[in-house]
Length: 239
Ligand code: ADP
Image (tube, rainbow, N blue to C red; front, side, top):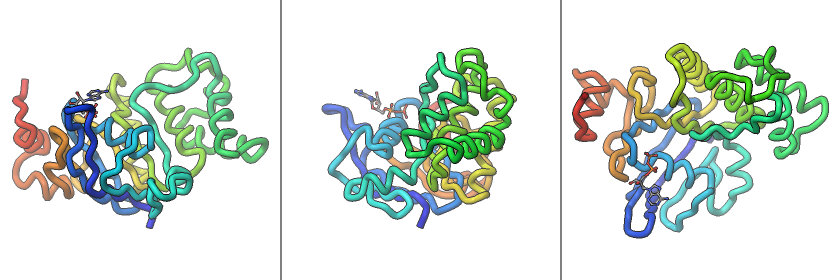
């Protein structure tokens, strides 16, 4: 099974509880939005999914591999786009991807072929020789997504990937990642922006460390808009 399973996960920073018994499943080839306001616990969960943090509670399975018992296998099926940009700005796009490919054991002609394919899919091939520093925010994000796709991950995590981007870039990246899920990648997309979510997406609403709702956008909303439902569930008031 190439999906993602999170079961009974808790995490605290000292006395501050960031995740409290969080459980949900993302079936294979599904776009799942992890929807929560600032402070909900989204980044903490991502740090646990990528093993930057660890917890003895609960269980995480990536593509069927238990992250605690079999971390190498589990992480080899995972791609990640962090919230904070992580490209080396002094290197070209291609150099950034080559370096990453080498870390994953891909080099030479094989790596170049895969790099060209991934950059092409993100309409970034003609920018391969440009320094990352010279790219705008949207193109940097595209390069990071291409990089995350190099090892052909079954499960792709993106932590608020459109923060700071203009409307056209946001739309382009959101559409592309929805297409990836249709083609077979399991996607967990953390956001607080309801307009990035489509009616048939899977949603996990996280608020104050707890899962408040799980299901399709349609099933969670009923008659009201997702934005209104989200504001009701998280107790926030519109500006
Ligand atoms: P989100 O990504 O949804 O904004 P976070 O996972 O960053 O949420 O934060 C969840 C909770 O944990 C918040 O209450 C936040 O203040 C707290 N928190 C996050 N990082 C730390 C830290 N390093 N030390 C103490 N508290 C933290």
